[in-house]
Amino acid sequence: MKRRLASKKTVVCVGPGGVGKTTTAAALGVIAARSGLRTLVCTIDPAPRLADALGVANLGAKPSPIAAATAAALGIASPDRLHAMRVDPSAAFAQLVNEQVADPELRRHIFGNPLYRSVTTNLTGSQEYAATLALYEIRRDGAYDLIVLDTPPTANALEFLETPERLATAIASPAVQWFARPDPREKRFSLKRLGVGGAMVIRRAGRLMGSQFLDDLGAFLLDIREVLGGFLARAREIEAVLKQPDVGFVLVLTPAAAAVSEALYFARRLRETGSPLCCFIANRTLPEPGNHTAASLRASLLSLPSLCDLPKEELDLATTCLARMAEFLAKIARAQKQELERLSREAPGIEITTVPLLPHDVSSIDSLRAIADRLGSG
Ligand SMILES: Nc1ncnc2c1ncn2[C@@H]1O[C@H](COP(=O)(O)OP(=O)(O)OP(=O)(O)O)[C@@H](O)[C@H]1O
Ligand SMILES: [Mg+2]
Image (cartoon, rainbow, N blue to C red; front, side, top):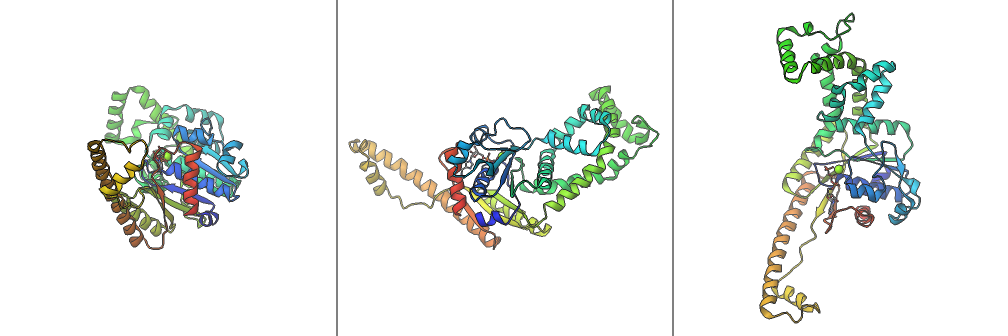
């Protein structure tokens, strides 16, 4: 893993919701920093206890070094090797607007419009786009050897990759272009431009949401044309960045049938777009099933000093329960193994690193170190 990280300048952790992307991003950052690379972990909404553990709970959109004690506990020689930050979607969009709009009055107008706030925080894909905007800026500054980018909890790993393109397509759509190029003499958005059907829809929306909505919409459409070109250009630049050979995608998955099928699809799509996958990380894998017979479980129970005097019926009951549970876990472990074999067969040449299911959340320095150790040795 160390070798693989050293050949990249950006590693993007993708995968469906809840599989362990943020945890993996943090652990990869630890591995890179241990090997001396100036590393930035760019997280999105980390679980509060992991953020606490990394010392990023109160951080804004600016990278900060982790605490010296944290670095020492994680086996990192110097705290300045590992910086961490949270992606702040509103800050990322604000930076882009600031870059594109020279007039401070117009900027204030845009930022003050409730529709602007809604589009940049609630619109599907706004978090993904903000993450790529942040990545673009940090890469441009060139202060780090490696940036590890966490991605938002999307329902589908592909959403992240497709966001800049989708956004560019949406921006370039004739409807938006049409809105973006109103009559230069117009100072206000006019329903006259919409034609009968469009005007009716907007009027109806206005009736539902109040006339303030129409005013906000009109102001938004007029103001935003100043930045549409910039949004489009940046989306295209980001698309190009994500295809650079020094950008690697790490796909985190759980070793279950649906997740493996999705991972295979994602690997194929990445190959088609010219940015092949770096590796798979199969998180929360169960260990190889041991050979637990009722007799061996009974002997193990009896070897515990506190249980050696257990009445025979209770010992029999405990053995039966444990045997059933062991059989159940072995079944899941075998199914996981088969799925990982399928992944390896159908995506030849892409390495799979497994990370075991820990008995608890990864919310302490110790558990993060355990994951990093495991990934580092993989
Ligand atoms: N190997 C593991 N063993 C046990 N718990 C784990 C492991 N990896 C991650 N977790 C826990 O699983 C939960 C989800 O992990 P994480 O937040 O990293 O996932 P995510 O993919 O970033 O989620 P989201 O899509 O919501 O952003 C966390 O509580 C984390 O501590
Ligand atoms: Mg996450």
